[in-house]
Image (tube, rainbow, N blue to C red; front, side, top):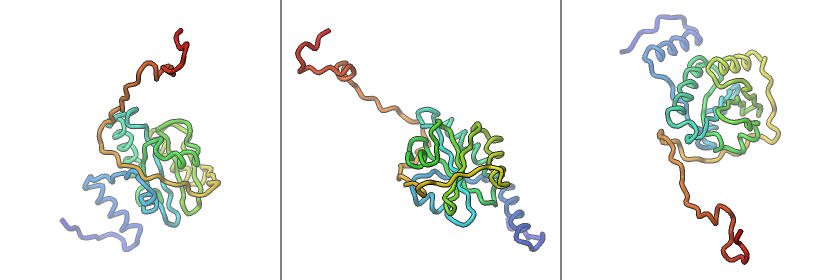
Length: 193
């Protein structure tokens, strides 16, 4: 149903009206997966845009249910900051090694970093990966209380990866012989204990 707008004729009031209509429909914005450099550029390039990148645990560590809980939490935080400078993406920890190393995401997953492509600067969430901590971190960025770090060698290369299929991961099982595990070589003389 179309609804007449009867509010103020200022951009901020019109945007607020549109956002409240989105809330009313109950359709949350999907947080896109970082599957390549094109996704990063389309989502995060632009003046005064801050890209919030969440590195989520490997699918074998969290399962589909755990990953979806993290994604749902990010969607709640994204809703709090919609209409502002923040754009949200997620990726599987370990899949973007150059990005992770450049932004010091070496302490395990889940992890969160805010990145400004135009300023080539970032800030890492050093607290727990919870809704309240993430919100506080993003608020501190907007007020200038959060320290940012310049990327020493520019924006790192983003690898192209297959998007997540929404399912639990299945471990790859390789059958190794005892000789392969122990490093024994059948050709060596005197290989017995």
